[in-house]
Image (cartoon, rainbow, N blue to C red; front, top):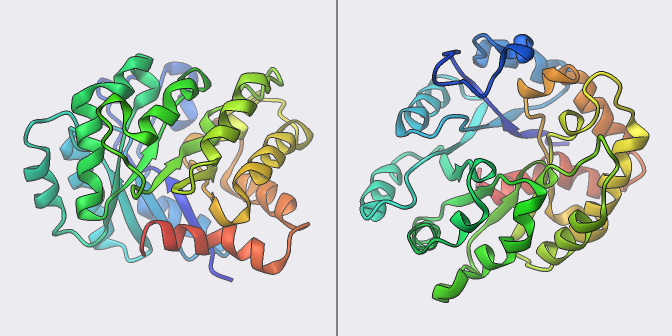
Amino acid sequence: MLKLDSHQHYWKFDPIRDNWITEEMEVIRHDFLPPDLKPLLDANGIQGCIAVQADQSEAETDFLLSLAEEHHFIKGVVGWVDLCSPNIHTRLEHYSQFSKLKGFRHILQAEPIEFMLKAEFQRGIAALNNYGFTYDILIYPQHLSVTPDLIRGGAMGLGHNNQAFVIDHLAKPDIKNGLFSNWEAEMKQIASFENVYCKLSGMITEADLKNWKRDEIFPYMDKVFDFFGAERLMFGSDWPVCKLAGEYDVVCGLVEEYLSKLSIREQGLVWGKNAEQFYKL
């Protein structure tokens, strides 16, 4: 069975650039590079990974591409580019020469909700499909109410019907406090768009970091399976951020236990086939 990790990060820790990694996150306040991840992938039978941006700069994109060039098991990169730039087509044309660059992400969770509907941002999203790039949607539940407008193309009527989107980390539901209401209804609506996938990632870090339990997380997994089906879900570890709440094998074990009730075909889709198709590996 093909197994791929659709969501992990690398960085050379810089306390100024990486100021989102606070002192309380001591366990991830140092370098994490491919030689640190490869043994974990091997131990869990995972053949490759997708490296996702953690800093909003083209230098970050270039850094990840350089790592992917050196390490064959990095199958793809989700980088960053200024989607609001008037020169977006020039930048995308530049990046289209890199076969391992699969898509882009902006840290929308740090932006006001209305940023998602800015005309400049919408034009940037519209440009991605011309080059076959995907887009990872990183948001909090409060952003979900306008996410359908982002997917539709907003008031500009750009129509992103053919753009491949994926929701990172189940849109970060409040697992710690067991909240479902708005998140559940809005995720169901988003799943109605057939060009949107969802990553089974970042779940344990939305629960109680020290005392999370599988029975608190599985109900959220139930919902996204109901909404997206096994055909539009993919496994992601969110390593090394996951270390705030559990080691790599713990994340894999949680997903493996949940998927064990599914058919072999469905397990194969979630573990790797969907990521392979989505990111055109």
